[in-house]
Image: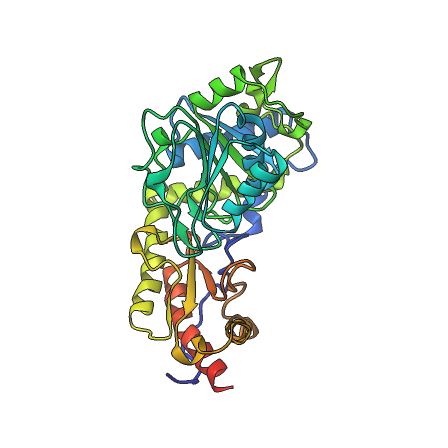
Length: 385
């Protein structure tokens, strides 16, 4: 391993796990048709919002009998709308194996204070025991754990004859991994992940069983206006036709439409997934030949193709005390940012010390491959210091 400067640089140094890299060829000029200074309730605004919903359905393959809504506060807002509006009718199994899943546990156990909540946990790099889930209960889980690089292997573990609802935070999985819609009653995600959209807006997708719950059950706690999905026991259908609860940014809506239209040009969902898979492979090929690094998720079946999390396994580093390991790992992103090679690839603040490289569809595989050489350079330079 050498500290010589690698020859090829990534053309785009944006490897952040959110907000994520803009699509290849992105330009602010692509947003010139945004109806700025107009009401989102005017015809022009409604047309754009409906366009965003229609393209979402087309590219993700959302079934015709599922409803798609644009909601405030990113994926967090979408998940919490679902939790506050739907839970409490029966027991709930909460699955957690990283920071965001743990956040939903906190919502349910400490905020909603549901007495019949069962928590199934696993540490970073592993996954909760999916075979132990009780589908007589509602089930809340992340399809892809953004901060651990661990995803569910598929939807086969979810029962077709479940009595409870499945509420899926899919924010790092949508547009990169195949979601099994028949197994999912509620799906949420945010624009700033796989498609590299702008932040602050979330998507809430409801299946028929979730709508039935909303119209037949009223939670015991009060709901703020921003969470209300029903009026007098009936679904507020306008939310799922582009009539948003609060005022959306039409510039962000235009940006999301631009990303969706780009996705159409590369083959839709299959094209997006292929790009993410190629990016993961570039990392995997490098890890296979590199002794100092490994995946945090050592089980390939549950390894994310978007938020790829890595750990340092070099014996000289793992022999250091925990504080020393953490300090060493921090040097690598700092060196790469100083060279404008890679931005924001530190592991998540609550995760074990490591690196997190976004490999979603808006990232070019050639840039991932170039980055791996610079990772070797940064490691060697940090170790030699």
